[in-house]
Image (cartoon, rainbow, N blue to C red; front, side, top):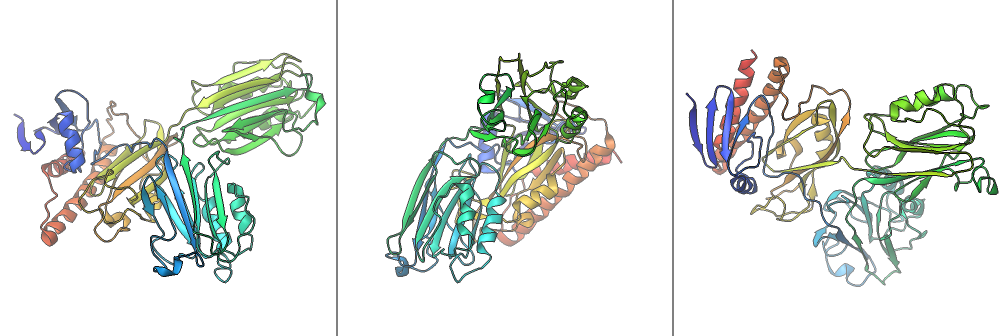
Length: 557
């Protein structure tokens, strides 16, 4: 006989080692918004009223949130205030109304430390969320290592991130400072004493909306604004192969950048050094399209007898999931096993004739749906192919006090791209009465998430101050937001699709014990809050989740 308990959001039934919850989609949405379901493990299936099993099949924590909403573009405004600008000395040096940025109507400043010099903000290109920020004392009498530190900071930003730079007080140190910003589109080579300066750009190819401006001493503040259009996740790759007999090949230098090349996101890439003849191979990051490696192999019939073997080794060294682009320059007609080198990557062309052009775009791993290859007869080139590489970046968010669970399909593992515990958005994200600070990020967010989830097939992390510290003191309700991808690789333990059944009791027991430990920690924290503040955040769902975890552990003893 099954026993039942009436919870505030539905009816729980405990039958053996399986828990059930009945809830309407509208009920669930309301509970998620009000944080009543903070540690419930449910598999949510749409329907007018659904009974959902929670057991050996599913371990999901739906915790007051879900996939982050993608912004439909956003506006960034940046203000730089220098010492001699009118009004600078009429307010406190650290006033939030001097140097700042505004994203979607939300102001952000540097909150800690010396703010003088260049302040740099890194924004998520999808949402405008501030994911990192720092100040560098580039005053002429400031930090002699400031330019170097800023270059390192910018270099660590992910490809595609929005970069905003503003100067506070003075940033006139000239020790290589202009070269630090030049890779990001800046053409201003000199900044004078107490001149104000602001720039909005993007890491990667210089965007069409790029803006920068400086003002002479006393002529500021300097204000710039840019609309960041909706980021198109994924990218387009175009590849061109030019052979010796193709029209126009011999009208330009043999190593011309306009013959054989690839283009990713409007950015052209060539093989820059050595002999370019034969098969050229480009390896791209599957998330950003960035070229991470490239090489040429002299596969001409009278070229390098080891070329096919070398190319096979090069391709074999590429990470699983990487985008592979192959183009032939001049001629690549060596037949000594060449077709077998490309066959594992989807190629079905078994023969390439003398001075025929050829191009292929593929991915390491299973042959993608967007795979393309083409060859053209002698003098019928150049050969051009193009493919759109779709995205696979996932975003998850959970409100403070909840448990965030992320997982990957069987055979794939988690790669944490970015993580943020704190608050950079207003009450529209994780609504709560206490939102005193919307400009705070835990510096350990990324490192902690990677320590718990990197390389695993599934992981659960509690979003609380005990794990990330409190970057938003005082009185601010926070959230944890994580971006990740699922890549092929050997996981720490086998991951399951939601519909799969796993009979590996040892693995289940390990997973149950980990979850039990996490749940007990949450119970202890809630008990402490009850004693100290009279709060009661422990609902029946937490208690039943603990029962469930205990049942799972006992089942495998």
